[in-house]
Length: 242
Image 1 (cartoon, rainbow, N blue to C red):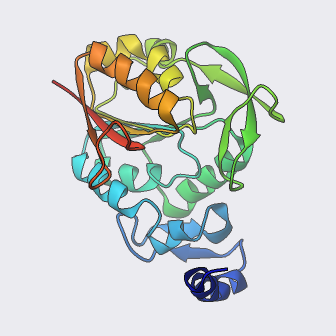
Image 2 (cartoon, rainbow, N blue to C red):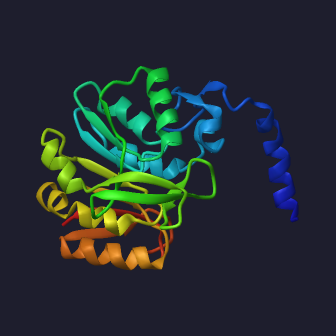
């Protein structure tokens, strides 16, 4: 083990003494002051370090009254601060399929008294039906996998919006652990009509190629959100209509 890893482990040791059920205010970042369940996600979530730079860029885009689609809402890392910004007239639609994450998402909403959030208990894909999901690197991360232990409901954005016409997107965040292109395909009509900026967390070269092909065909321009990295190698994109 390197000296850097040993030092990092020593720094994290006191965090293990905090009960996972403890409720604390987020220490810093865009979610500062929001009440958070410690064990719901990695410690960086309540410390304010998890995806900090990306979150600041995302939040700077939001304005009161907007509708935000948070696709892959997890336990509310983006949903909660977004709801705080777009209130009182705006809305955040939080798409999340996993029971464990939904439990903490709803707990966080209740702890913070945040209204204006519509929780959609489904995975977003290119076909309605069901998907099997598998746990990822942490208890809050899941991805689509035919051999997964969990079966969840799947929807498309176009079908969902046809039933929820009052909630077209002003800004979209997509982080679905490797099914990003399926999300885009299932929302092709919605993106073509409303042309929101889209923040994408990509997972691998196949996703970069597939998503780039779709977005360019729809008249979007893609830029990297990672300093010093072009979109051809970046895993964090902002897609904006030309």
